[in-house]
Amino acid sequence: MELSLLTVCYLIGSLTFIIGLKMLSHPDSARKGNLVAAVGMTIAILGTIFLYEEEGKKLGNYSWIFGGLFLGTVIGVLAAKKVKMTAMPEMVSLFNGMGGACAALISVNEFGHISKMLTVSTADIPGWHTTIIVSPEESVNMIGMVITIFLGLIIGTVSFAGSMIAWGKLNGKVKDFAFPGQQVFNLILLAGTLITAGYLAFNLTANNVILFYIIAIASLIYGVLFVLPIGGADMPVVISLLNSFTGVAAACGGFLYDNQVMLTGGILVGAAGTLLTILMCKAMNRSLTNVLIGSFGGNKSSASAAQTGPQGNYKEISLSDAAVCMCYANKVIIVPGYGLAVAQAQHVCHELEKLLEEKGVNVSYAIHPVAGRMPGHMNVLLAEADVSYDKLQEMEQANDEFKTTDVVLVLGANDVVNPAAKTDASSPIYGMPILEVEQAKTVIVNKRSMKPGYAGIENELFFQPKTSMLFGDAKAALQKLVAEIKSL
Image (cartoon, one colour):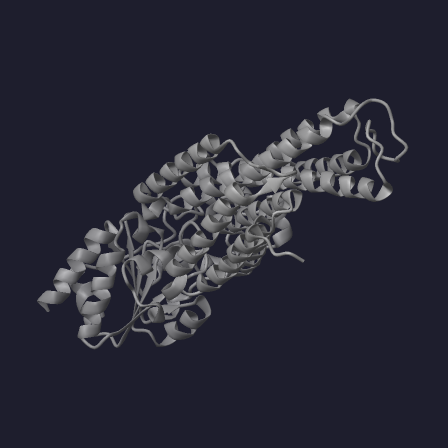
């Protein structure tokens, strides 16, 4: 078989995707992995533009193609340059939603081609009503194409709608919302959409083409209702799940166009997103079934959020006492959270780490899988400050270390260190594995105030005898803490 230059471009693109994904598994090589995959994508795109031919004709319309590429590149570069680390989850959701929308539009475009062939009169092939008589094998292929179109439409539209709601919830513009019986309604809506799509795939005529657009609207509604009730610390699970949806939808587009690199990229994104979702569900002790229904987290938080007032007395610690406590400790573990990201305090946190190590203190970081607003948020944040990856401990490893730790410094984390996950069955985070910081000899918690965390519930850790509160902005507090330690 002749190996065309375009096929070589697609092969290079597919290989770079796989290599890049492998490199993303380690922080030291993640940036290079991203660049490798980007180079492969560029080769695949340019190969398609200049080498793809259909019936002896090339694409053409280069002004439109490169105009779109230029516009998208400018928007992407500006967004990446200006986005703050605290807003990274919102940007991920927004860009992921755009990917889902593109996949859905591919299905709309391809369905438009098929619908033009349809007529009210029937052909001799069961299930297909066209003016063109085709063989049974071709009929099966066409039905398979329509099924793929529907899958791309439904999955892509759900990903788009859900990602937009997630974007709004992460930046505070959209609030959690649920109504009685929403779980059942979601299931009925999803089942009805899939059944209608299945029926239409085998019984498509010019008379029922309108059902295609009804399916699109139903998918849009399901995507919104799927994410609306989800809140609290469950959002990282949703982001990873929606990411896998976009990958699957893109793979459907690759199948429709017989584009190997698009198919490979979609499969990789879909598989990686699915595996990450399963890991996030395990870390949150959530059921993947409930994630798909859209029935966890936020619909419980309202009851727990009704808890008002502190659960007991808390004590504050001065900067000088905190500095002395940490300086004369043998082992200190730092637990970063969203508050650290908000304050952009990762660099001064790294300075504190180096200063303590100069005084002979063993310093490490405990990373919860869902700390922050997206998977890996804290890892990215600390990597930006050049914190060594060797100092980052996963949750299981850190929980073994807390028992022999002198001081735990919690920086802006709340729900991921809340003992209610183990002790309060009515809590919306009950059953979620947490960082068991309460096992350390001393716990110092830095927060702006005593307000509840993202899940909207009180943290009983703050009222325990071994816990002391260090109030204030994380960056300002750490800067003062560094100054105090230097003066000792």
